[in-house]
Length: 132
Image (cartoon, rainbow, N blue to C red; front, side, top):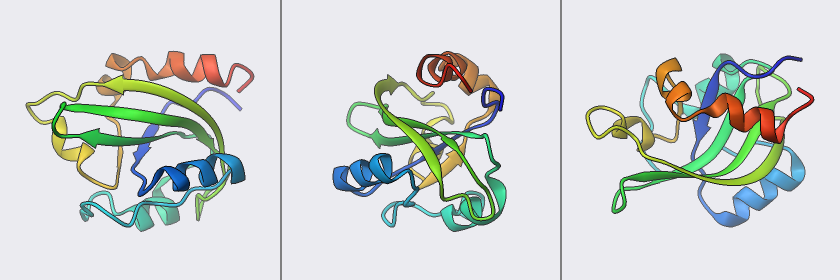
């Protein structure tokens, strides 16, 4: 399998959920937060995510204006996408205030290519998943 070229961000409800997902290799979409038609987490897991896509567990802090990533992973299956090879990590990214913040308020979204490049996600995957 090659390095991911598509990168998803899923929110989480609690730190305990993060620990469970990382230890069990699963995805538990958040039940709290906005849920749009474009990126309904249930639809993403059921139909849109592909095997080999990259994924981050992260939350947005509106007071600081940053997104904090706490885990990085690669989807191992699809339809439904519920198996993930996870690694813990810490990274803070700054969404663009002119349009980049609304997706971070959602429960999940797919990063646009230019944002993924700006955040240098490909390098993160090479570091955490060198054999992929």
